[in-house]
Length: 71
Image (cartoon, rainbow, N blue to C red; front, side, top):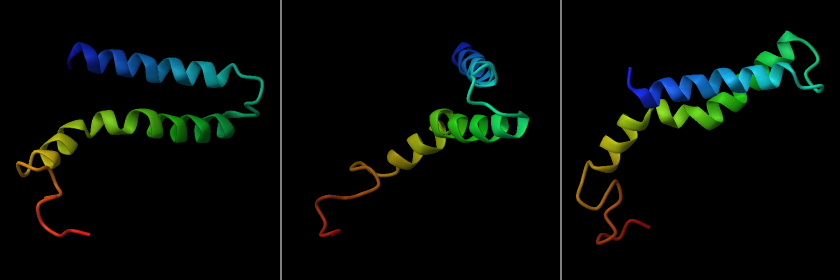
């Protein structure tokens, strides 16, 4: 695991701690739903970054060739 991975995991755990201590969190089920939704939205792309970068580099112009009539 790289240092960046450890930092992201630490921030994700910190997010869980902050959500748990909020007054708006009613119970553990409410916390879990918020934690999963916010965590997936904020940190989901980080874990798929390699796949996203390889997709973007699949051609010289990226996934869309603007020289061709694509619209």
